[in-house]
Length: 542
Image (cartoon, rainbow, N blue to C red):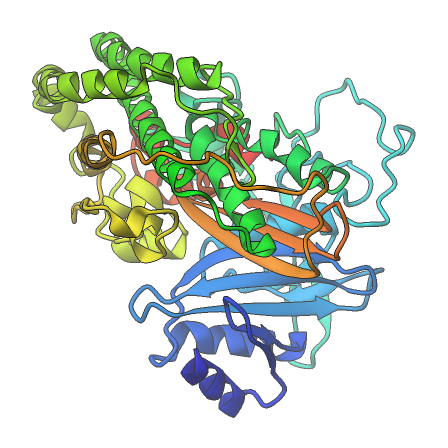
């Protein structure tokens, strides 16, 4: 980290630095794109992975917190860029350097009104085009008179704008066309069952061939990040179960870890072990549902019934301890809410006993099927450089050879003590994404086998104050959720309520890479590709 700071300071004397878990660089916007280009292209820095981009309203200024990682060198850095112009805030775009910044910056524009100079598409991302105001600003007027419930359908306009910086430093607003008048555009979603939720792809086609996809989000947006600003820290926990509900345990674990880190709270050993076991049961459950529903999308309906058979066992285990089968509300600040059910160990052992036989059945029914290979081999191929630039983590990234498992790259809980393999494959196609999840089920079983007879006695939760106040500062935490790296950013001003909570969704990046992966393929391939990305829409529409 010291070498990173010295290198940046030598090239950018305007930069100031703050020590922390991640080195924080403060840079004026006029130098921001130059610094970003250096972070990406300088071999001594090599920050090829944009981890998160968090829009912020600091009252006097608006700005962004960026988090970067070098996948080759293993170091991290965060950058703060701000503007004091609240009337027409502008910052320079970095979407030309990291593809994932395209959607990230549109999200910040949508909620904070920050215009990104040279961004190719400055449209709202989640909210209607006629929405008034920017909801995550602290001065936002949320009265219903400003934005009444509209019963009319939003007009679709194939026009967007980009704010181009000229050589003299002036910024000019230019109109751009999304689809040309001669394009034949069809809607796939938001009601299509194979989009796995209310997600809409406006797709220009030439016969059956996909020419271009324009992604539409926001059909179920619930304003969770805004709601968190008015609640105590304990009250924010239940939202995480309702983001990617197939990663409910892991998401809640992440928020708890972030709060515990800020408090300096030590979690009892028994709770740490229980948390990991619940997370891995959640991962198996999620991957089983992926396999069943994906195969059903491709016409292999039988697989759904086979995978649901084992998944029901896991939901029964959850229900006995948590009292629920979907939104578990189990992890809490300091540990877990309830101790394990008396049948937990026996039920987990029974699951581990049947899983090897079940996986062989899945392989017999589907994995070796010639039709499955014809639909999946060589379809939606993504290179390692693609998945890193688009921030596509989880099984999707690992299927393209990117070793991005947070349990290995930044271990949390007791994962550093456990023996399991990170599954990576080089092909980067739809079949590889399927196979990675099959192998990850085996590794999760391996983790559970190491723990099921070694659950220590002791407390299940640390002593936590009834009213939690985090010290002034900001924290960022990631875990390996079922679909990839799930992150939580918290900024506190020392109050009982957070100043800002950002849930960094893996699914948003997975949806964002669909146009790149599907372009030039067939419409049927879009169903295959979207299925292997396995995004969950509530995790996108936060």
